[in-house]
Structures are given as C-alpha cells and as structure tokens.
Image 1 (spheres, each protein chain N blue to C red):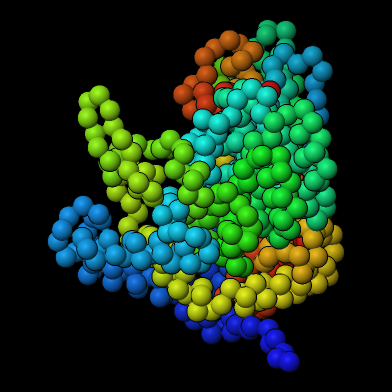
Image 2 (cartoon, rainbow over the protein chains, first blue to last red):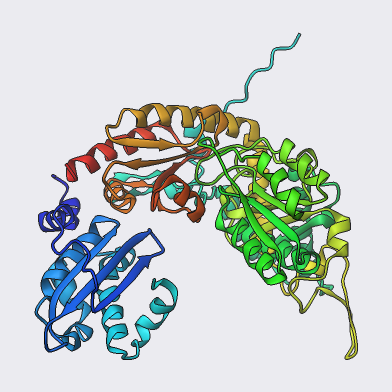
Length: 146
Length: 414
C-alpha cells in the first residue's frame, strides 16, 4: 500500500484481526448473549459470555457474525480487551478505550461499524443482569435483539 | 425509407455543466458512480432556482400580488412540464410530493386505507425498493389484508404464474412494482403484469423513481393507475417528487395530509376538500423545488431521454466487460441491453463497506449496502452489495478508475 490514507485506515493490525479473529465462535449455554445488527450496511454480530464462579468476572467471551473489516476487527479486539474483566467494568467501558485500541480515524458511518460489538456486548450484559439499558442502548434493544 | 439514427449525447460536454465535477476528491478526479442513489445537478437547474428565489419567490395560490402570481405560474408551469414528460392526460392528476416514497405512502394510506380489508391481498415483487414495499406491508397488516411477494429470477423478472396462484385464494387489490430496479438495474416488461393485475380487478402502482431519469415513462402506455417519481434522481433538487394518479381514483380517495390549502371550506361541523390536485397538497408546497424540477425536465428533454437511455446501455455494457476482468468479482443482474446504468457486484471475501471506503480514497463514489432492498439481499444470500451507477454525465474513464480502484482493494485484502 502506498496511499497514506489507505494505510492508516486499513492498518496491519485491523486486517490481522479481520483475517484471524480472536474469540471467534459460539459458547453453548452462555450466561449472557445478544445479537446486534448495523442496518446501514448489514453487519451482524452475536456475542456470548460465560461468567466465572463469582458470577461477575467474564471467564470467556466469543462472537460470531459477518460484516465489514472494521466491525469484525473491532469486535475481535473487544474480545481480548474484556476477558477477565467484570460485567460491571465492561458495562461502564468507555467507547474511547476501544477506539484507542482500533487506533485509526473513523468517519461517523464507520464509527457505527466499530461500535457494533461493544454495544451488543453491553446489551448482552445488561440483559443477563437484569439492569435497565442506558439511554443510548434502549433503541438498540428494541430494534435489533434476537 | 428513412434510417433511424440512434440519438447520441456528448457526456464529456454535458459533464462541464455540472459544477460538482470541478473538484478533486481525496486528491483524485471525482468518479461519481452513485447516480442511482441521487443525481448531480446541472448549472441550468442550480442557477435557475437561484434566479427564481431572487426574482419570483412568494407563496403560491393565495395572494394577489405580482410575486405571488410569478411563483404560482412557476409552480403550475412545472406541473404542466411533468404532465407532458409522463404523457399524463391531465395536469390536475399530477400531485407534488416530497419524493416517490411519499407518493407511494399517499396511495397506500389514502387508497389502501379505504379499500383494503380481510381476504384482500397486496402483491409486490422481491425486487422492490423499501419505498414500494414497507408502506404496503404496513397498510396490508393494518387492514387485515395479506401482503405477498412474487419471486424474481436472476435477471430480476418476476414470476407471473405466482400472481394467479395468489388470486386463487385472495382478492388481489393492489399490484405494485418498479419499472426499473434500483439494485439490479433491470428494466421490466410491465405489460403482462399490468394486464393480469387489471383482469384480477387490482390497481397497478408503479414505482418509476429509477426509470424516469433514464427513459421515457408514459403513464398511459404503461396502463398504470398510479406512478411515483423522485425529482432528485433526475437532475432536479431534493425535496420534490411526483405522484401521478388516474383522476377518477384520486377523486374517489380521502385526503392523505390535512391542513391549509387542501380545503374547499372549513366549518366547525364539517370541512370539505379542495379540487385536484390541491386536495393532496396540504400546506405550503415545495415551490422552488417544483420549479427546479421543471428546469430539470427541460434539461432532460433537451439532452433527449432516448439518448440518455442509449448512453446508459453503452456504459452498462462497458462496465460489465471491464468489471468482468477483475478476479474474484461477482456481478448481479441482467445483460446490458436489459438494464439501466446500474451494476451491482461483490468482491469475494471483502465486505462492500470496505470496498466502498477504499474506492472513496481514490475518488470513486459508489454505494455499498442493501440499497433499501433487504428482501433482494436475502434472496441473493448476501448482506450487502456494491453498486456502481451511471448517468448522462458519466464517462468511461470513471469506470476505468473504478476498475483500477478494485485492483487496489484486492491488494489491501490479499
């Protein structure tokens, strides 16, 4: 790649996560799960969470789905970021933390792709814990949850 | 015997009349291959609308001053231009709306809301834009009617035999399809479908949003009962569209939107509706937008719709050939002679959003997504496609730029 703009958006780490997604798969009998869609471009992500014995720590987290490189790579990164944290910590995870990990400038449209996994994971955790969905997630729950 | 010489247009010359092309995008010449999404606007329309605002703008139909008269004649002049373009019998049948979507909603609510009931069916095809799908699905459900789809083949042609199957169990009241598909580009042979719909006693509703920019749309030749078009796809401004309907149907219908201008008289105990077309044009009209649509129609007539159609077939053939050279590409839709300037495709293993973004970095604008045709995407077994679409100002070099861009896309994901 010689185009700097191209290089910055599709940097190696994004393509690596896209081609070799971490935590890709399904957890049968998951403690928490949710399905999210980005209706703008048809990205789909399902996320599965298994808690540890304390019922709070994320022991395992996996995702399945299909979509653009940004949505799938961001979700893959999220799997690595959230394993071992507690549900409460992840529910409070700021999107900037994930954006820093992604590390490329995103247009508003692509931001939706990048946030699909995080939003879906948060919805899964809120559903499992029975806590009300925060404002920004409420519509998401109504529209897209399986 | 006179030999018919096919009309030709000079896209390179026409292109100079569209100011949008006077810029570079991401340091590259702009290859605007998203005209099926919305078209760019020529100076004639942009400057004409500015002049209208500067010299002739006021509200229409209400005041007696000079500006009101000028504005009214601007609006009504545009209505007559639309009538002539669509070969409608009467300008009163031309209703100004925001876009084709609003026109189709008008029919669904104002006709469907009073004529559909249990046992009735509304039939569309798998190839509909959501604008000719969702309103019918909604109104059919609300009225307790069935909402059913005709399957399409790989060219996008609907299975007519299914209409007869549906008619065995239902009273088919509405058949609604597009004339040109926005996603596959298919130009439909509507005659058999219209004839069968009418034999069944159904009305035929035609979404011509993708057709009107590209070919002659003759509402009488189609034999339709309602036809909807959008101004923004045909060199006109956004915010203006047209619903044409047969006068006797429009007269029999209840209004859709209520308020100012659409009334005859208003009393506490009873309000009566205005005459056509005013009954369906509540509130202040999109006055300058309608005027701008009239200018766009003048422009298209001057270039010649036959020439535009021929140009697009040529570009579609060129694009199908050039894109076919790209490894790992899958092309959708009919042969070039059966399609308007629309080519949908997918790159093996690469999501359309990534394709479109990398193309954008090279100055190539295409659409990636489901094109408001999710039922079709389900049929094709994909979440989305890429779509390159052409218009009268499109030149082959833009298609070359697209092909080069796709090679770059493959390199990124190699």
